Length: 365
Image 1 (cartoon, one colour):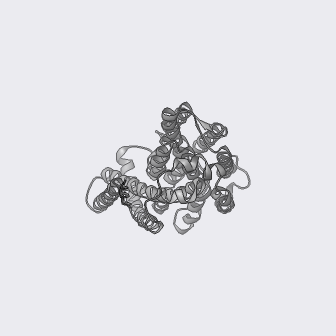
Image 2 (image 1 turned 90 degrees about the vertical axis):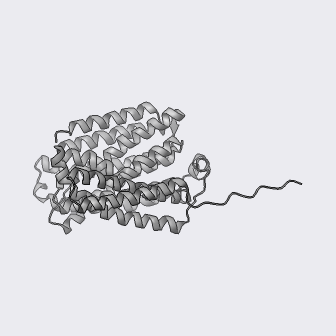
Image 3 (image 1 turned 60 degrees about the horizontal axis):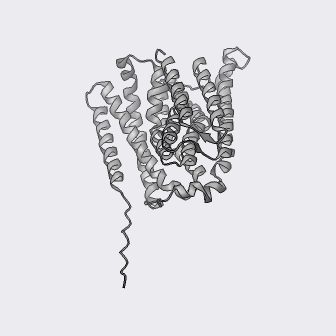
């Protein structure tokens, strides 16, 4: 008579979960100490940035536990929305501090870091391990069309100012109007983004996710709430140390916003998107990475414009010419790459190279 082995007990938390919890606790505690202790501003800035990144990792882990229940499209929307919370907090506190240049650079920098650096690294990682990867081209095209339209909405107020049209004296009112329109477009795009595709529901996407979620929904949601609250607090400390750190390091506000703040605020996509591509879950990887810059253009930027009305600093959608050129070139280049539904490591390397060139251009301001 054969005796069947007892089933392995279901574990809610793995060792890696406890590592993330511990890192978050240590990082937030260290950020609190450096905020209120007499330490160099650069140290406080680095520690607070590390704490933001750790909390972003906790948010990403929580969303991973929700993602399999909702599909690739909903996962990307959820990941993008929650992943951009640290950037929203940082942007709001930076506006209160009067750092408009940093906020505008961070908005564009967040778009660039996602669809150049993170998407490029994901293509490189997945391509080197698995060769040419394929993904849902219909979803990718829809997302990139929205991205192009959203970018156009961000560019037009700037062009109206540069060419001195009659709208130039009304840039604040124009920015508010455009912000409201973009938020409406985002709401209209949600049904298509949340829809499960047939291939994802029953094909490769389902096969890729062999491990069932370990956390119950209530636990994942509770950890999301805790991480989001801590992110708001740490973002305030991050911005408090930002300006003196910029002066101490001798870098421009434009570079700080475009590269440093953008990468710190996008830590979730930096980790999760590349990890998914490495696991050959290309649909999920693309959805997570592309939805974040789309929500930056359709939600984060408009939200900051409206929130700035509550501060003494008004944010408009009139960006510096080089920022506009950088984001326009980037979105067009990425659209050409993803429209065919395939990616290679060489395409990823080209995206990373373009990001490095843009960063170098803004090093001096």
